[in-house]
Each structure stands twice: as C-alpha cells, then as structure tokens.
Image (cartoon, rainbow, N blue to C red; front, side, top):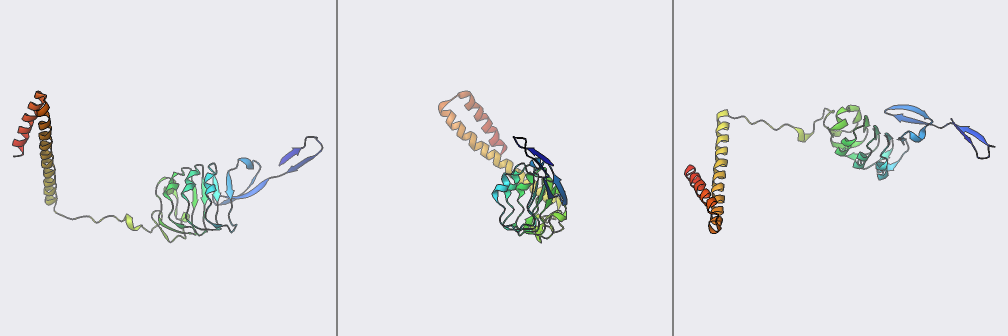
Length: 222
C-alpha cells in the first residue's frame, strides 16, 4: 500500500502495487518494494524472434522467465553477463542449437528450464549445470550427456589395446633409447658449432672444456 500527499496538502490517495510472478516453478503474488525486486516474467505473451541482446545488460536480474512464447534462434551466450541470475526459464519456445557453455559462469543459477525446445548437442557439465536434472531438458530429443541417459557420440571411451606386456615394455625401452641417442647426437653437433665459434675468438679455457666434453660424448655414443 502506497500513500501520497501532494505539496498543498489537499489531495491524499492510496494504492496497492502487486504483480504475479512465477519464481522457480511456483507462482507468487508480490506486493510492495517492487523497485528492488529484480525479476522479469514475460511468459505466455506470443513473443516471436530471437532473444534481444538488451536482455544481457540486465546484470542485476535474479529471475528471467520467457517461457511459452515463440522465440527462435540460439540461446545467446551474452546471458552469461547476468551474474546474479538465480532462475532462467526458456521452456516451450522454438530455440535451436547448442546450450552455450558460457552459461556455466552463472554461479548463482539454481533453477534452469530449457524443456520443450529444439536444442541439440552436449549439455555443459561444469558449474551449476552439474546440479540440474532431466526436467530441465525434457522435450529436446537431440540433446545428449548427463543427466540424460543419451550419451554423446564423442564421449565414448576409446577401445583399449590388448597386447603382450613384455612387448610393450620393450617398445618403450627402444623409444627412450632413440630419444637419448638423438639428444646425444644433437648435443654433439651443438657443441661442435659452439667449439668452432669459440675457437676463432677464444676464450681458451672454455674451448678446452668443450674439447674434453666432446671427446667423452663421442666415446660414449661411438
């Protein structure tokens, strides 16, 4: 209930501000203090087209409900800018494409409803997305990944190679031997180059050190 008195004191009137909101799946009637309640419920309005970019600028919004419209296009990644968002309902639209992984940045998101669209691809697994159940995605037959039972094709584990353990150990030993030999040869070539440069301009003590080290390496890998 709001009370107003004009400057002359001659007019006095009252009114009550109230609005019905669907918050996290439950309908509430909110009265008073509407100026600090950061929620937008635009469900069931027959809106068409893509989600406008200006929505992403509502950085202090806690609840966004755009369900039961005719929205098309992809879920925009700019929704990640709404850092305070706790409830996002985009259900029963005609949205397509993948769920943008950028939405995992919404660390306060407690409720997500993307059901009844035409989304596809893998469901993000990080952040709050690891807490949502099947109900958040029902009706999107092309989605895959946890918590759905449908696995994504690219997440299948590669077949395990079966072989003799001794042969594998021998192969590893040969590979390491080749690496060490290559390192030694490369070191010899590198020291030879350094030797030539330093021989022309000294210092003699370092040249002598290179000569001794080069001789040892040549004997080892001869």
